[in-house]
Image 1: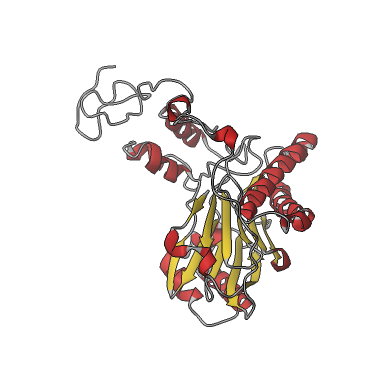
Image 2: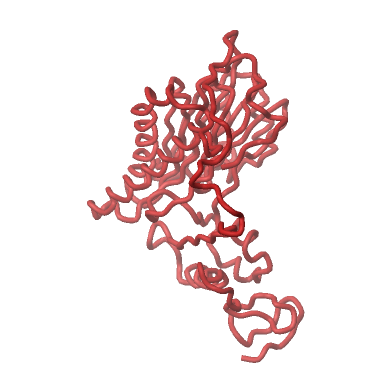
Length: 365
């Protein structure tokens, strides 16, 4: 979980904020609308999910994900008031609550898929906003490539990073052969709800300011409108409802092919001081203390690769995905040589003995 620096200390806010949101979806050029949104301002919760799985399965996954998260927020609303904003481990209570709800949604989707063959292989992305009771602290969680943007003082900023194959390439093996990337699916998502029981949910905690505008959107919007255009559209002085409709109209005007989903949330200032719940000292519990020499400093966790829908990738794409997977070192063990690499410059190769596209070295088979 990430929190912005001291300059964004949420305790400095002197007035409570109220999130005012609106949203809409559009089927685009698809036969089914698998995007789903859910706005629960009374819970400080705003959700957007982009389902996948074919037929009606994607719609089931996205609707189930948003409903499950909202249900958990409802059932824990009473106990939330009794807990501190930041716990003894230095973790925000609402952030843990949001992550827990998304994990529950993941488990529910997997359970439904196991019990019904027509829903096997369904999954969904999810991006969520959860505001503190005072509205001045915001927690942003996402899984997949549905995004969150923030417009502040006329400047737009991406608040999430896609869980996509291209981002994985940038992080793990940026020198991979371009010919291999050309054969990979253009919008391959590497993390989604419903794919596996073990899920990682990034949660970012930021200070919200009066006048901030947050945008949640599916890739049906960002495929046809770049960040600059999103910023221009969001700076128009209109209500969240009008902004959401304007964004979808702009995407349709740009010939969007995919489903489009948009949620726009504006932070409006009130005259009420923010409610504060005392937080414990940020000192770890006794069980977590000890000599530094006896504590592990690095833990490595791995993930699997899935293709959804299961028959959606052609043989060339599947082969490219397999090659990329082999470039990843095994989890929990020593690093090994890549699947194939140039003996002179180390550039990854498609197969042993291939000529290096970078330095031209003829590698032995």
